[in-house]
Image: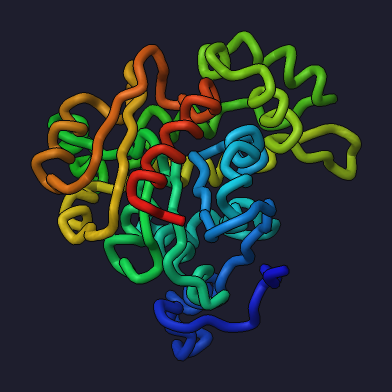
Amino acid sequence: MLDWSRPPGCSSGCADTSLPSDHPGYARAMAMSAPLALDDWGGTGPVLHLAHANGFPPGTYRKLIELLKPRYHVVTVRNRWLVPGTDPLEVQTWDDVAGDLIQALEAQGLEGVVGVGHSLGGVATLLAAARQPRLFRAVVALDPVLLTGRLLLAVRGLSLLGIRGWIPPASQARRRRERWSSREEAAEKLRGKPLFQRFDPECFQDYIASGLTSTPEGDFRLTIPRAWEARMFETSPRDAWRSLRSLSVPTLMVRGGDSDVFFPEALERVRRTVPGVRTEELPNTAHLFPLEQPEECGRRILSFLESTHTR
């Protein structure tokens, strides 16, 4: 059995902890210095790392994970937003999330990992593979957040003005309800919301189980604090396209046919920017299709990996 416990140090890519303690960047450097733990979901075969979407803990993907385990040993990074006491300001860009993934894999001496990521997790995995291709044998990005056109220009403009908190997903995340008296109340309130209406029933129950955490007061709160969720929306990449040009490992990108995040224009730009990447669309699904149609999602992942002889 592999030991996924939190290691005491890291190899390459660690933050600079040689800064004096009174330096403005000292606290962030210390926070970013130690590799994050890997959680082991079991399975048989090569190691497969699954990176989740913003706001949805790894447990939400249990059904997809179970479909992958007969052929792969699945692990997930215990990201900063899952570690109590962490500060959302530790992360400045999604490149930091990619760096966390690189450090976690390197700390365990892992190379040739299969990287699967959804949304934020898809972008972080793509960035990590572009920076350290030796760590990955193949990558599957599920509806990654790759912006183009006016939306990309708007995000860049808000960044230059220092007001990225005005981005609607970030402002909405700050206002969302964070606590419920019971899981049953949360399920009743959330099930009818548009975000969850297409969810596979098991995936919805897995979200209620893993997306909420009991508190000492006896109620339940979001496992991923809304401050962290908002921060990740604020720090979405202004331009990941430059990094994608360095992508050299076998890669599949899948777009949900009705996605409001990974638009057809972005898919076409992927085909122009990285011609070697395989692209597919999953009809009648939205951005959260890994949680809407986990069986079909798993089938496509396994089919691609089989075609690349990733065993």
